Amino acid sequence: MAKIKVKKVKSAINRTQNQKRTLEALGLKRIGQVVEHENTPNILGMIKKVNHLVSVETA
View 1 (cartoon, rainbow, N blue to C red):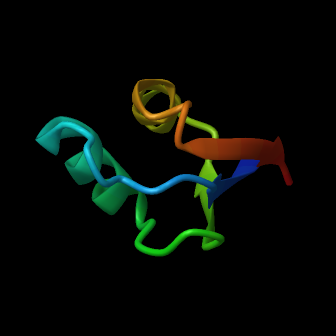
View 2 (view 1 turned 30 degrees about the vertical axis):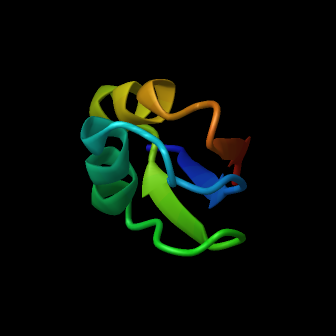
């Protein structure tokens, strides 16, 4: 499987609880933090829910 890097670029303040939990499930806590995940449909769906808060690049 291919890997993707997800970076948190915006704050989760004033966001819905669902979006905050999605960021936490992705492993993102601080702005600027980068995590690496497998490119699976589950992860892509999570990224799609918070795409306005993160940036994504292929590894």
